[in-house]
Image (cartoon, rainbow over all chains, first blue to last red; front, side, top):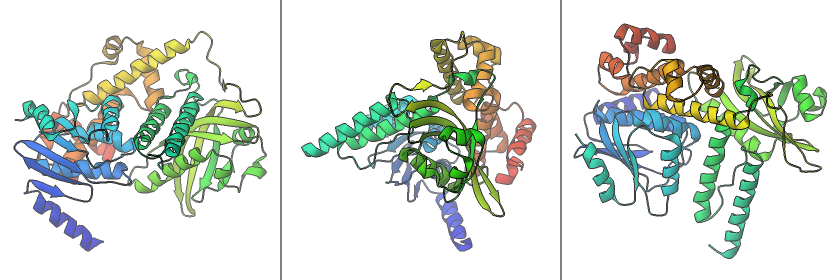
Amino acid sequence: LFKNQNIYYLLTSITSFMDFFKHEYAELSLHDGILYFKYCSIPDFHLGIAQKIVADRIRLQREQAFPVLCDLREAVQPSLEARKYLAVEGSLLTTAVAYLVRPQHSERLVQFFIQVDQPPVPSGVFTTEAAALAFLTPFKR
Amino acid sequence: MNEEQQKEGLTAIEEMIHELAKGNFSYRLPSTLEGEFSELSFLLNLLAEELSGFFVPSHLLDDQAFPYSFLFVLDTNYCIRGVNEAFSGLLGQSREAIVGRTIAEFLDPYSFQQLEQAFTQFTKEEGVVPLIRLLLTFRTPISRIESWGYCHVLSGLKGQYYFIRGTQLFVTDLSTEHRPQASIPLKSGTSVLQLRLDIEKIRKVYQYILAHLHEPLPSLSTLARRFLVNEYKLKKGFKALYHTTIFKLHLEKRLTQALVMIQNSPTSLKVIAHSLGFKSYPHFSKVFKDKYGHPPSYYR
């Protein structure tokens, strides 16, 4: 375990100098003033995973706030606690979030999240990357 | 999707609607439904989850919270290790007939699943163990009892135990299946509509706090005026709904965000404190240490 932890710290310190990060839950990259956040399939999306995802994103952003393109075309179903955490702590260092979904797929779930959990930054649901980027552009620095 | 799958999906969703209408918020649809029903059933499960958080017994805004609380203790195999008289009375059986049996024998299957999930959460969480709210449906041969309560985990040398304390909400007589009756009557003079309006306003205050974590909160009286609610009801109702005070929630949430930022960003501690609305760094450092046991610099 000790060895694994060392490898993890080594990898995270290396990636802290990069604009790309990938782990089992998501792929994150910074490009042209926008943070691209692509979710992988997460079978048991509990609070611990939400905390790890937020921590890794903040580490990558290095204290700068960005508009986020959150790609949910791979469906995820976070637990109640994970959703509440993503709505509040998940909005740290974000200026706006565009959720990219497949047509007729996950759209209702994301609308539910926006309406019920009410993340405090401007949020929108889109089925094309172009529309999502158009929404985020005014929030770029 | 074939006709049979469609019929199966519709029947399952209809059943879910009936259960929600009866106040059984612990009911969940299976994840095996096909096609469009899959997303719809997940959405209904989310709704039930949210509703169980919204549900507040009318007496909670009065002085006596949990006036007739039941208690039972489970071990990690879901075996009942102890009960109080209120619990044995609730199930209509003697203490000896209950202790030693598994809780699954007395619970609705969906409630048991919820309990299992809650226990899994205890094992996943590290550090501070959260208090888990539960909505449980007990079944006896003659009745179905909706209840809600809290689950604590107790760890000792001889193992881990779960301590569940709650109160009954509705009892449905299964022999006649008439509409459920509130087991605890409203205090005379309390209108159900007024109660709901107050709760809605208090929830708006909660959302307001979450949206204003980066600035100091206005006073309680200002908040009460802004949300058109009586100051006393706001203070008391907020505590009853969220088990904390308005200012404590605001502080706790900001400290949680501060910890995330300290651990994962190079931003200076003073800037983090300032960005989260703390008036001075020494004040931030003190409240941070009170919560986490170490000063902010320890987590760098």
